[in-house]
Length: 289
Image (cartoon, rainbow, N blue to C red; front, side):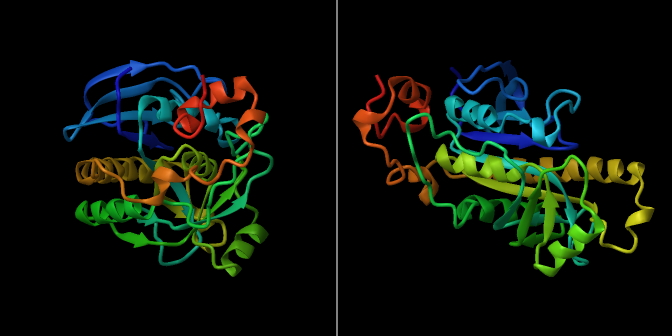
């Protein structure tokens, strides 16, 4: 199979990467079911990449319906070591304006019952997640954002809510009182699973509008949000292309060895099928044949 080093996840508004050349589609089936759609493999700035539209063709899948495990597992089997995620978010702070870019460094979980791990079924693992984003990859994404001319904010907490409804006014005000920065519906599970898969992960958060706490919120129209999504998609493509060009082939971060001390179950107690299913993740630590 075509070996790629860099994965790209396109969120709301970013359904393709126009600059990718020599492209072909690959459909993958995983032990966890099917990903959101086919992966588009190709060349971007001289490097092999795989692109996946998070919500599927035509934006058919809601955040709660996404098969996060299949999506990340697919990137892992393709060889991805880096994963750049572009995502539309709402702003919880006045200074984070629509069309701004945020590279967050923390998460706060408000999802309900989503599957967020590859492990279980006889194999227990606990990865570190104090710093949920790859620092090296985030630094590169931030530098690329500045190069692209974006108004960029480095750091901040991404509240990941269940959706698909947006927040109530009471919830939005509470998140602000807690010091949260942006709010979205998709990135937490991706980040957790990428860490378990030893893939470096970062979010390029694209602010489309203020959340409902803002006094101007009621004047926001669907047309305004779509216009911002379109503009954000152009900015995101420029940032991602520049970041891909900057990415080193050799990784020096802790993401690359996140499972080294995380596997708790005694090897001879792990069911054969579980070891087989998770071979792309654990094969370098366990005999899986």
